[in-house]
Length: 96
Image (spheres, rainbow, N blue to C red):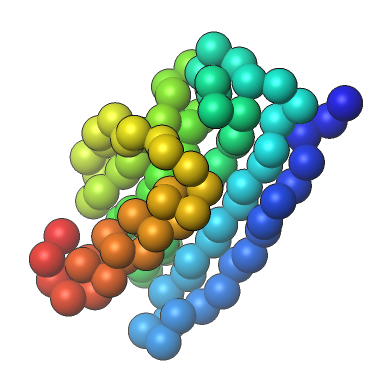
């Protein structure tokens, strides 16, 4: 059984920046992805990732904010998306 694509969207926001979200449901949990999801959420400004949430193989759940990588506690797809958008709005307001 293959991974199931749940969401893939790529849009340009009101400032001309790119938001891209990709979510996969895995056929079974793995050591790096015990929750059974693979994901990548990015906010790109002037061709640079300024915010990113992902769980690249071997790295587990983490987020990138302006080049700094920190662990992220995954607690569901909805919360992941909400946290990403909150950080994106903070960035737009100059708080990140």
